[in-house]
Amino acid sequence: MDGQKGGLLLVMAHPDDESMGSGGLVLRHTRAGIPTYLICATYGEAGWTGKPAGAKKEDLPEIRAKELEEAAAALAIDGVELWDYPDGGVSAADHPQISQRITEQIVKLRPRAVVGWGPDGGYGHPDHIWIGACADAAIVALDEAERPALYHLAVDQPLAEFYREAMRLGASNGGLALQPQDSVDIVIELNADEVMMKLRAIDCHQSQLEDWRIAIRSHQRLMQQGYGREPYITVSSKAASLTGGGLLGEFG
Picture (cartoon, rainbow, N blue to C red):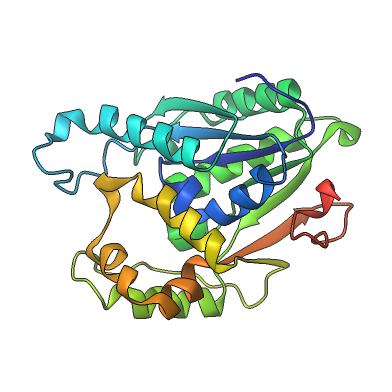
C-alpha cells in the first residue's frame, strides 16, 4: 500500500467496518481529493450468516475479501491492507506485532490523521477494542513530532436511538450492546447524496446485510437519521474540529 503522503488512514477490524462505521467520513475526504487508506485486520471469516444465497461457510473469507474490494472502490479508497488475524481472536493475537505493522504503515504513508476504534469498540466487540488499542500504541511509538492526529469512532445517544429503532425493522439481529458516549467531539452530518453513496458501499457487503439493513431502504427519514450521522472522539489533534467543508481539521 503506497501512495501520496499526508492523507487519511483508517485502521479497522473487519470488512464492512469501513463502510458501516466510517463510510461517510471516507467519502467526504476522497471526494475532496484526500488520499485515503485502509488497514483491515481480519477477513471476517467468523461472520457467517448464510449469505449470499448458494455460498458455503468455508468460502466466506474469499467472499468478504471481494466485498471489501468492491466497497473500497465504491468509497474511492486508494489502498487497502487486508491482514489475516483471526476473526474473533484479535484479543489473543500478537499485539506488539500488530502495532509494529501499523507503525510501519504510518511511517510509509505519513497520514495527517488516523481513525480507529476506541476502548469501547463501539459496542464492546473485542476485535474492535484490540485493533483500536494496537493502533493507539502504534501512534504512541512514534516520535511526538511525527504522530498523526488520532480519532476514534463513537456511538452517541442519537445514533444509539437510531440503531434501536432500525433493528426493530428486521428479526435477523438480536441487538447490539451499544455503549453510547455522553459527549463526542465531532459529528459528520451527511447530505442525502452522501448517504446514498455510503449505502452503495454498505450494499457491497452482501454477506453481512441483516434484515433491518434491507428493510431500512423504505424508511428514508430513519436512514438519513442513522446513516447520515457519524460521531467521533478526538484523541489528539492540533487542528480545528472540522473545516468549512466538513473535513477533519488536519485537511484545512
